[in-house]
Length: 194
Image (cartoon, rainbow, N blue to C red; front, side, top):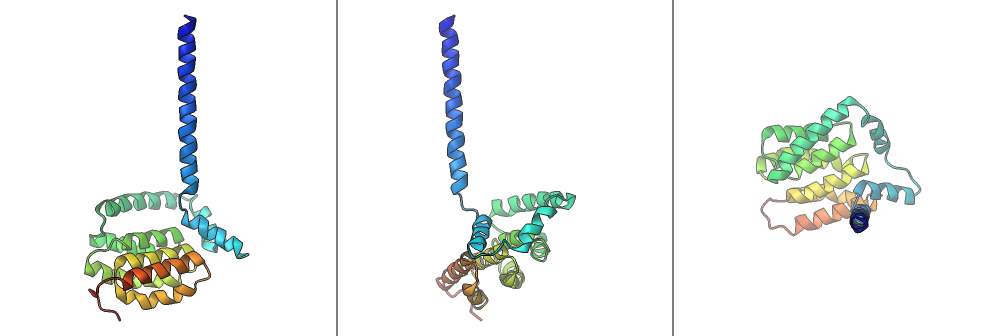
């Protein structure tokens, strides 16, 4: 009887140690995963500044019922687009545009993430001016995602719009613009430059 209790305790201890180890590994990986918004906030602090005003205001928006419904829509549309790896329907293009015109920076950022999956020429031509407009957004995270989006859209006509971002005060944004320009310049001339 005593040996059965000792075996049960040993198994329980082994399970607890394994769970603790797995949790520690996942926690470590989570901490090391790139978090763009966190990096940008840290860069602001290192420059003696504070996070963008939009990033502070977003905390109060997240506590509203509107945010819950918008978040559900973001997840459902995002799953569809990311699953297909393309933005195909006119409704999805309209959603991306409406998000890019939102007063909330998270929606503007999500709109650029959707636009990056525009594979057809008509969708790209409709979305391109909206994404280019976000290159001068007041929120640095949106500028970063807009630059990245233009690189993924593959339209060389965006290069002149990206060049001013090379002097952005946030180094991550400037690096995203540099990467996007490099990516676009390396493409074959399928789309003529302006």
